[in-house]
Image (cartoon, rainbow, N blue to C red; front, side, top):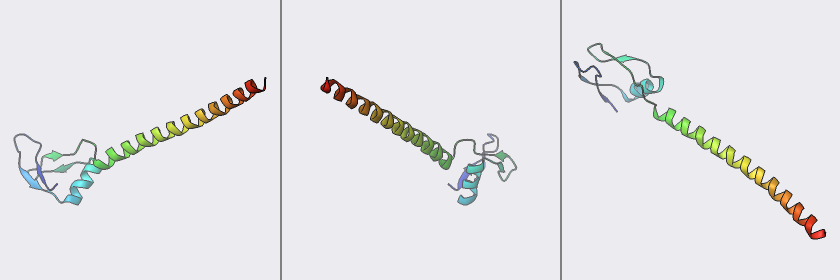
Length: 89
């Protein structure tokens, strides 16, 4: 972080921004300007956004796994009851 090149191909000036400022702009995707006045912004996902999305996906997998375990426990109990009934016959 720190040094940024202007995205305007005719300008291309390299300028320094504070790490805190750069991180804030990456998070909120708001515009800022190079020293020559060309508008800039970060359009990709920030690290925080990427990690939140990954956490959400992992949480969904955990919920799906918990639901599968519940379903299998119910199936297991039903099978045990069925086997018990067969043995008694």
